[in-house]
Image 1 (cartoon, each protein chain N blue to C red):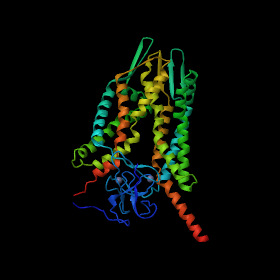
Image 2 (cartoon, rainbow over the protein chains, first blue to last red):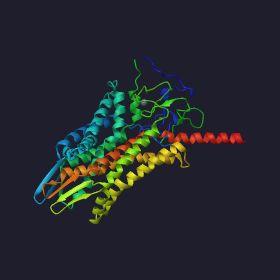
Image 3 (cartoon, rainbow over the protein chains, first blue to last red):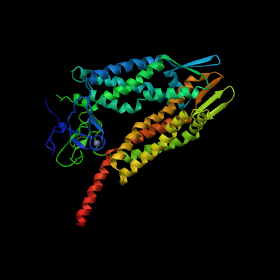
Image 4 (cartoon, rainbow over the protein chains, first blue to last red):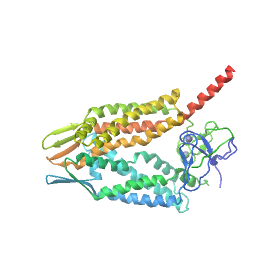
Length: 216
Length: 223
Ligand SMILES: [Zn+2]
Ligand SMILES: [Zn+2]
């Protein structure tokens, strides 16, 4: 076991004991708070460390649930509409392909990415990174790079915004036609709640710490 | 909540003042000879020198797209009786005229108030990061967090257009099509998100320290 570049600083502490606030650059000696507690930067109040009890297992369970829900939501109709004997149903794929002509097709691709593809990729990356960690195995190859990517994807995965968009759309056409919810709508609603819970459990610093195995 | 033990004996030290480079992706610190973080692989920069230029470039791109997004129709509705093309504000006004004031307010807040507020907030942060400000850095940091959090929610309007266009396709009775503003509005939201992400929030805090040191220096000189 060799340590790569772990010189001590002028502070007399090894570098791996330190943590710098990503928002304001304040330097601290990392001290893990008790489970359920939070260590915050006392200059800008960014949460630095927030370990949760059995977070890894919970995140894996919730992430699996999300994966199943997203895949199911793609194939079931999402919303239904009826007027004057005419009816139509729309699935998630229909929604993304609504922008089909010319430059609007780009928007369709973007929409599909933000409501299905990116949330899905992000979930897969998190599963890949956390599964070996939770079962006390060595991280799988490229785990650290993939976890960084999963964090960068976070603002672009917009499933929950899409779900609220459905509610707005319903009110907008309520005077035009009758609206019904398809099974996928309810699946997506559950999914949104899970996504919000899941991000709350994920303490990125703890994950980074567990991925930080000395290189042999 | 647990406070963190401050590294070193000085009241407060930044990674930069300690002669270190912090990784903004995983919070690990390194000696300045590292170009990339050895833990997560992110590129390391004590302060991102191109940060403000990129903020302004995306900001201008976002604003350029936001103007046509308001001039051209977002939604085109065909019914048996008439065809109507609504801009963002026009759509909100029409919904309000049907009595749904709450929804009209949500649309106006999401697609007018929030985008305009974002442009102003990012400009304010970028200008004050460069020239300094009397506004407390804690408050500016808070403003930045609000901009980052809220920015993506502006996409809701684009999704509503997509949902309506997919759903309301009842041959001649009623059909809805996306207008060209849907594309420019989406681009405007994306560019504004990139602008906010380009901002290195550590600049908010550096500025304060630089001026405090300068002030102390002036006091020493005059004493
Ligand atoms: Zn901080
Ligand atoms: Zn890193």
